[in-house]
Image (cartoon, rainbow, N blue to C red; front, top):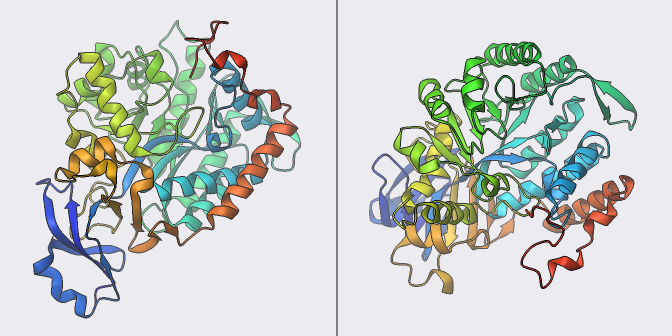
Length: 480
């Protein structure tokens, strides 16, 4: 018996033939796609289907995949009002010492709610960030994020690992007490989280490893022998469990150095990757590592990720939001449009990075980067039923005779009508089934206010007068 039958949709399948099926039907049984094709060929399933969804006027796409983001950022939106250094300083203060488990739980629920309502069904999230501050001092923080993921019904690949040398570092634990944190302790916590939560397909919580990006010899303050020792330990832990490995913020020779350190392979997903050298590109070709391109990120203002050039050289490039702060969000439709404009402006060529490619980067290419292309990323019989219905009956998408262009140029997160993950309807008609949005937002607001007050960072919530009338900050600050 069919559990869900979606009828009369326009389906952008992202299958190997990249079929766009008008008046399509998709049958879901259990957690898998049972069949997909013309509605006339599958209409008979309606007689016994448990639930039938009339999707007239809607486009159906695979669940969107956000390949790079940061936990914590959802509660520090806009802090610093464009002062990037102040914002990074606030992250360091909050993430290493000014936040308890409740903060991380509230932030996870808020970010997952925003993703769910925007059609993002799978994401890679680093457990912290800023200046490589990861909450792997205690497993309670990772446990809270994984519990929030299971509540939401979405999938999260949570990246955990050591912060930046030198060690030990000073953290405040879940009990509020200050404690020195060693490299070894962070690996121990990471391995514990892998052992208990790494089941992305069945429990929807995956765990992968992260470690800081280090510059080539002579360009990094950390001693090279220490970098090599840490790299060997992280690589051994990754190999022992066969998990994904990710790094945040590659640029100018650091990919080639990571390859020389033995960190890269087809299991690696490297974010940002701006101003790369030819040696970096060759290292990607040799290692088969993938890239998470973040076109809306601060780092993409300060440098350029050569995404089209890497695609042309056969390197897998996926899209990431870089999280919800200081000036972004989890709207992957925005990031698809931003990617096209970003690279077309660079080349002064409107043919660069076509619409189909950016949708691939947020679906099937992203699944490939995660090693999950056989399970998610496209609408195909036998794959996981991660399905998003987008309402095309909007003025900004009318006439909708070219659905691919409408979705990648004009759609936004608020156009998502229905989201199905693992064959379960988690949102329908924009009514969320798994979470109470008002309660989630209230909890997040209270957690953010408390943490910022406790850390004495309230002044970073003020919007300074220079934001008005000026073409740039008169004090010369870099704006986000």
